[in-house]
Length: 536
Image (cartoon, rainbow, N blue to C red; front, side, top):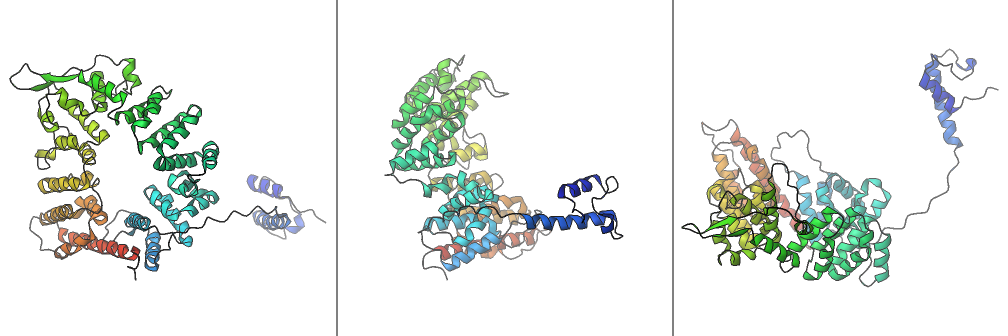
């Protein structure tokens, strides 16, 4: 009886080739077949034999059931809508969109609304939700909040969804309660990094001092990159009680940790670091009374001493920046803005930024004031530095770029922010408004929505193509109040084309406005479906 070839023999023959190695089978078994075909037949038989001969392994333990989700169930209409949103996939190729709404862009708003109402995700839809969140990181916080504890449970079972374990949002539902002191300390000592971040964030939200004390206990043993992440969690609810811990962190062996501690201390106007920075900055900036009109004179630091470095000043400037410009900017940025009215003759922020600055220091000084206004969220200085939205190039003295203006706008209340951007659009159109619109609260206020729609209408009348404004149109689909839908009715028809208009532009604009109107109606339907008792 012929012995059957082993799997290793067959594999070696396949790798070397039947021309170089004799097939390890009885020649009588070839039955006239070519060697390659006989090799494949023998491999098929051997594969069945190997599988049939495997002994079953011991049964593993069953996973613990997923935690129960006690939140209210989704209304049926809203659940059906979520199925449609998750089934949609972004189109490829970047071609013409036509009038069809992009459902993938509606998913973030749907999730935000569902979380506002406190609904639980249908269990059978959690895998699809995690797949969507895996593909789009911007969805993860809202998707994991909606999925609840089941997301963390599934993340332990499927490597593709491991991000759920790394997210604080996905893990907070499994954290120990406030009264479970032993559970809190055990998780802090033994938990995964993501679980520890989630624990620290949750404690910070409910008992800031407890979070800080927990962090202090193990601070010296933590890795530098972990210390940086933990320290950043103190931003929420930062108070003067955190100052001693942050002052101690100024001596940390990690430069990034020192810089973050200094930044946090500079946002506390009464901190010792803020006072030190104020004294340093005040020696560099003063009023010049030698001329016929008041002006600001600047004398930048001649060196970066160890005390400045300990307080967060980086000694080495980036490529292309002068050292003294670099040091001055950091001092002014970290100094409390209340330093300057007393230092500069009791003037208001508007009067201060209107003063001329000698020797070409104005750009650097005003840019530093911009960063300080953003860091300290000072609305008075933000207004002064922004200037009037109708001003040429819509730039205040310190708003040297659109990015600066967007950051300064974030220091204003939502309604004031929207009013400023609406004034900017009315005076300058939409060509530079995209970044500014991105910082406005949702949905856009009625004046801002009208300003955007009017500017789009003006662009249509000018005969340009709508894809020149595709970014703003995409924002409008997500941010325009659905109540504004009726204002779009007059823009849905294809207009008569002017002789100087781009060929076919009118038809493209009609499609774009039709898509916008359809998207707004879908958003309104989503809100109704998610409202208790409001869905069909």
